[in-house]
Length: 199
Image (cartoon, rainbow, N blue to C red; front, top):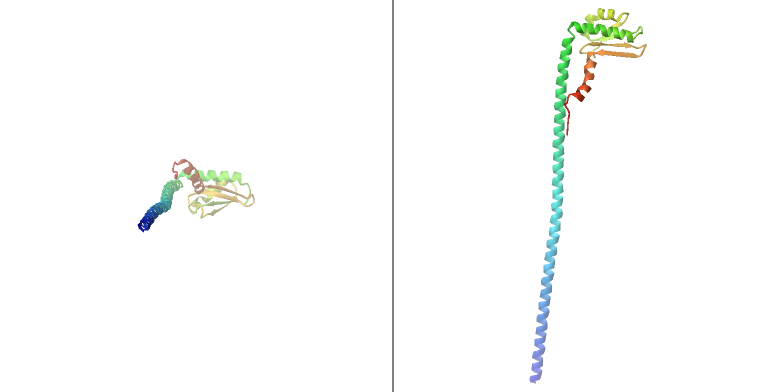
């Protein structure tokens, strides 16, 4: 019987040893699984955080680019408006000087030479000369310089001075106004003034 007890004790010890080994193995596997899952969760969390960070950075960069574009456009608009303002001041001063010129004897000479020049271009008998209201006082002198019969009428489109001539028969219009000559200088002014809008 002592043999049976000893065998039983040995068997129980072997079972306990096996159970302890199995428990240690299970605990080790569980710890390894837990560590892997924690590492995986940390990696996934880091990946998600990285993706979120990239999205946020992209959103911030887009916002900055949008704001820079707005500021650049506002600056360009402001510069353009300032250039327009300067251009208008320059042309307003030029207009004032031209209006002062229309009160001189040189202007009368220019009107008469324009009438002669128009007369040589428009040879038909239906010529109408248009002048501003202020120049109607020069009517007889202009007709005399034109050298033949013509009609003179007031044009509300002529604000500064000079004349336009129309021959319907020839289908021609000759513009000798100071208004048009001044307006034609705008393109030259824009190209040569040095007032440019840059980005």
